[in-house]
Every structure is written in structure tokens, then in C-alpha cells.
Length: 339
Image 1 (cartoon, rainbow, N blue to C red):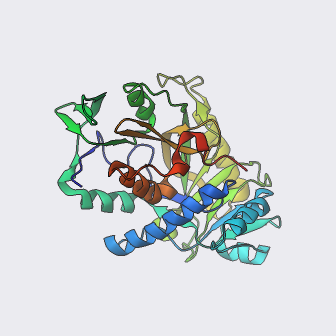
Image 2: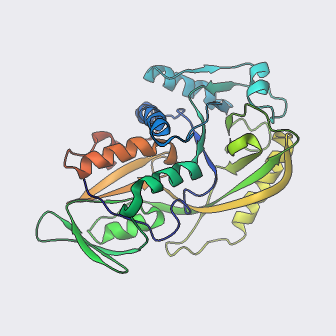
């Protein structure tokens, strides 16, 4: 297939920005866990093809009461190595963490996605197919195709796939679709590791509340010299992007720093980087994902999608080639909804 990819800014510098993301199989919907498991295999294929480490092999840890529930989901899916671990192994896998003796699950196939490396490698592979331009409008043509007008061109295509973050819902309206996307803002802070970086450093999801917060995620950056920490909580914004409360992002950042001081004493509590981004989630789950179709156009929406990007991409490529959309991704399936 001949393709053209429109990107108005630096690839990966918006919702996908930063050095790392958490790869985890642990979800409350077994269907989503299966999709992520498919993605893990494709990440491995990409690593070999592109010659770049794309996902670390240090695992992902879940703390709190959700650990046992999510382990049950993974056991139901099968073929995903995961188990409960004791405090000794937890300290070995996550030496930054303060003393903790509650429930802890290790997702052995989890790890840190090397986002910058992944986007850079894929962008280079695209070559001249990657166009620095902004899509202004979409319109159905008289035939089965879609007209795309960008800042500098007008083209017609057989199929169009839209993964434009906060702009996806607006572009979908051009073709008569109303996507139930909630727009919010988020902050993630990176902290330096004290002393020599550990050889092994797992990702973290902490719902325990033992260190003052019940929704924390964190992932190491390449080389394990720093750790990016964020709260799952976000700041609601108005449809035009104006914040309802301009002080809310600063408050979330302060809470993340307080969590680090109490729960991650292996980190220097003085931030070395702040990352702010938009969040686009769906009403049935913060992990929800769906694809809407209007003629030859497909619109992808959801949150926490980086880990399943390869499987999503493969499914969308099949749809764009005329092979039909994976039924799991249709909006009525509510993929990601806890079951």
C-alpha cells in the first residue's frame, strides 16, 4: 500500500511525549489484556526488525488490592506470565520503593516502552511518506474515498485513519460522527535516581494508598538514571481547551512530589523534568479504546494506548486495506470496560 502520514509537529511530541511509558498486561477487561498481549509480540517483532530496544524486560509491578483481581484476569486470559511476589523480590525488582508488605503482583512481560526510540525508528522507516502538514478538513467524495485538505495540499484517498489526539473528535464531526471523548490535562514528573542506577528497575502501578495516593504510575527512563511518576488523576478542561481551574496542574504536580518523598525514597524529590499533555479518554474506562467508521474513514480514540499501539496499528492497517475492522474495536463493544 502507498500511504501518506500527516503530522503537523514533531512526531511523538504531543500525547506520546517523553522518554518512556508503562507496558503492562494488567487490565480489568480480559479482552483488552488479550489485545495488549498481541501487542507485546509485535513489539518484539519491531525490536528485531528496527534493531532498537523498544520495551525493557524488567517487568511491571502492581501494588494494592487491585493486584490480586488483575492477576485473576491474566490467569483467565492465559499465556501471560504474572504472579504475586513477596516483599523481598519486590525490593529487588523496585529498589526505589519504601518498605511495603501489602499485595504485589509482578507482570513479567511488562516493562518500560522506549517511546522516543520507538517513534524515531518508525518515523525513519516511513521516510518520505511522513509529511509535515496539518489536516484542515475531511470530506466524503462521490465515490468510496475521502478527500483530505491540508495546509498545502488536497488529495483523495481510498481510506483514511485518524489518530489525531485531541483533534480526532473535531475531525470526526466533518463526517457526521460525534465521538464521546472527554478532554483533560495531565502532568508527569521525572526524578533522578539517587546514587548509581540499578541494573533492574520495574515499572509501577500503585493503588495501595500506603504512600498517600491510590492512583500512581511510574516508569524508568533509558539507563535507569531517572524515573517518571504521574497520578492517574487528570484536570478537566473546557471543549476549547481552556482549563476550568488553572491551578489544578500545579496541585497534581505537588501531590506527585509528595508521593515520591514518602513512597520512593530512592529518588531525589527535586524534579528534573515536567511533562504536560492532553488526555482523551472514553466514558466507560480510563483504559477504554474504540474505533469509529464513516465510509472510508476510521477514527481512533482512547487513553493509555501506547502499549497496544502495534496491535491497534495492525488492526487499522487491515481495515484500511479493506479487510474489515476488528470487531473488538467497535464502539458498542466498550473495550476496556471492567468485567
